[in-house]
Figure 1: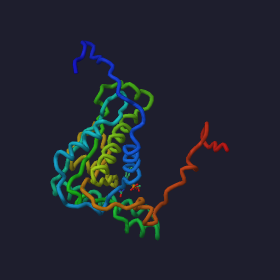
Figure 2: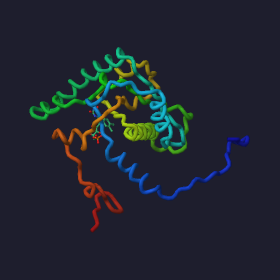
Figure 3: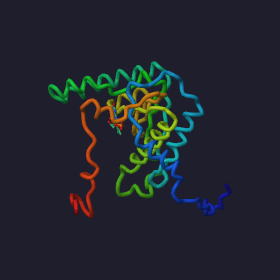
Figure 4: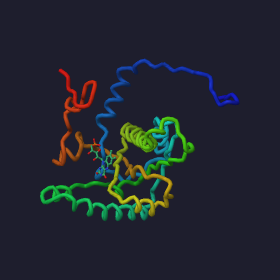
Length: 233
Ligand SMILES: Cc1cc2c(cc1C)N(C[C@H](O)[C@H](O)[C@H](O)COP(=O)(O)O)c1[nH]c(=O)[nH]c(=O)c1N2
């Protein structure tokens, strides 16, 4: 598209009414059947064009000041994934110690990653300097860039669900371990380690709920009206 010298573009609206009933159903179905995947990954490699579609979906996410602070590190090398698994394992032992007795036993019984099983991992990062020191919309809340990168993760996660691809977010790492394994510089924030692979089955509910770790809260208990804690009638 042509741009004027000042970079402005002609305003080109797109239709903005509701999607067809079928398309709406597809969107809600995708949202409600998305799951975090740990153990159900199939070893089948993911085609490049599919990975590209997932990344295009991530890259279409909203971002503060349109700064697009993300990078995507694609990790297929089994040796790198092995190192990441070892970093996970060590951090996971540390995390387990924080729970006592029965809760710790339950924690230790949970599978909380698919790093070696999934054929691909994607590390999503946030470059806080991507758009210079002053970013439209970030001035009064410096976390907004990381929130933006998380929006990219969610887009990727939903696109993956639509493609029959599972995603497992692994956050049980010491930051410095992932930084060291992937050679990530200090000025880049690590946002997510995502295990990515085909799945042919998904849990119908969050696995943590099924395994008795924690249940879904009632939405009605989470809605306030016109101020914190106000329930109204
Ligand atoms: C920021 C963040 C970080 C993590 C997660 C999620 C998010 C959003 N989740 C997945 C999480 O447990 C899961 O989303 C909830 O249990 C709800 O389940 P579903 O995603 O609906 O399947 C997750 N799961 C896991 O097994 N190991 C992990 O380290 C993490 N870390």
